[in-house]
Amino acid sequence: MTRPTFLRLKYSRVLRYNLFVNGKGSARADTAASPTVEATRKPRGAPALAHAEGEWLCGFCLNRVAHDQDRFKYEGKDQFTFYNPDGMRFEIITFTQTAGCQQTGVPTLEHTWFPGCAWSFCVCNRCGQHLGWYYSGAHDFAGLILNRIISSRTWN
Ligand SMILES: [Zn+2]
Image (cartoon, rainbow, N blue to C red; front, side):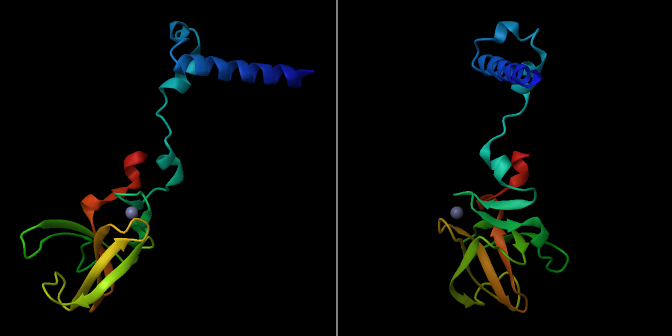
């Protein structure tokens, strides 16, 4: 009957690990090799498990809004710094598509940063926060404001 023995060992190991992370078994940490390894491993939070490499999330609600593989190069660049007419500085990353966003407003060429491209607002389709702009006309793409989105890489 090897199977019940195996199960008991497995259970015992988990129990010791739980005691260790709860601080009750720390005195035995030097002799309990595997619980030490498990306890020192980086915590695996939900975001790291739920989001794949290269994804960009809404900085407000963590909705998946864009992916690095959809970066759009405008004249060889996909990251820009601009100032609006009020002098506010925006650092943006450009994408061909933004699955987790929706367009609002009437496109206009007024004060556009990309000649021939009319802008409208790009908002998170879950929480509605303003994340950037959609551009249409000479080129169709989106520009997301860097400090309003979060790279999934920060969790890996
Ligand atoms: Zn959001």
